[in-house]
Image 1 (cartoon, one colour):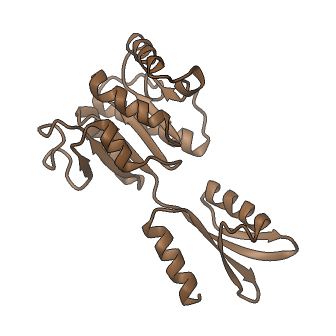
Image 2 (spheres, rainbow, N blue to C red; image 1 turned 30 degrees about the vertical axis):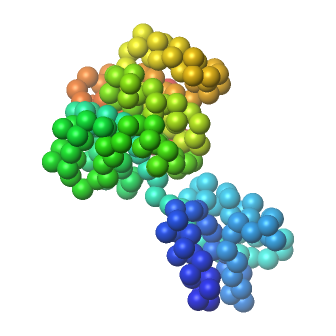
Length: 226
């Protein structure tokens, strides 16, 4: 690999940008994608990033090995509650990057959430700083509109692949009305999964955490949600 290409790959990964290193076989010519000069190859690169699979592709009569470099998928958890304490270690085992957001420092502390990123900013400010993208899942767990609503407002303006909110159907209906008042239409509001989690009959905090993480995985991987 040329030094310039290696440096470009490393820079993209540090910036959290998805890139694909395309190597032409058998001569070893390399291109970093996406690149407007290679539209067909960039399209194949997009599919490789979407499937998160590196491999050999035939493009325009040439054989290329496409090595996909995706940034880690993230979960932003709003509300440092008991369910969050159960959700974090499960998500860590699946290699998700975790940020717990809660301005209540007695809740969002290193003692309660060791070895994960914590933001004590208000959720709207935290979301602005975190910049959720298409590899980000957002879950609100506080039941407090002062915390959940600003986070959901920002989430709906982002490319987050998953947005979930804890609460009963009645609570969720009221939440949707408040978000409509903030200017969100029905198509946008349909992105919110509430009540959050797959319907597995969960009762305890660990069971609810499991249902939430299962739904996140199902949405991300295209699995069954019924």
